[in-house]
Image 1 (spheres, rainbow, N blue to C red):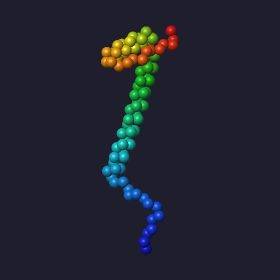
Image 2 (image 1 turned 90 degrees about the horizontal axis):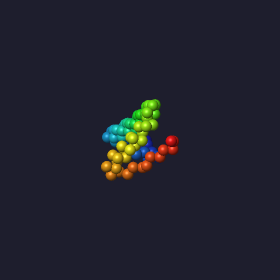
Image 3 (image 1 turned 180 degrees about the horizontal axis):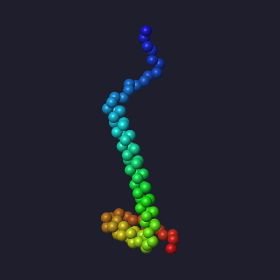
Image 4 (image 1 turned 90 degrees about the vertical axis):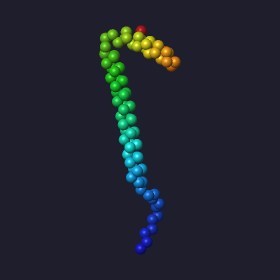
Length: 85
């Protein structure tokens, strides 16, 4: 007896398309993990800098050196706002 399909189902993707999907998924996961790790590393760096006793004296000099470097490269620098004295 003849089989009647009422719902059109597209053919299954080939192995090449499946492989490309797997590679894209792994790449997306690795990029997300890398971004999360970089944020974690920056947070730990700021935490360790904040725990140093003389960090408040160093930070303006770091900003000034970064501003000079970026000005030499032709990049605009936003002014630093210091709310605390």
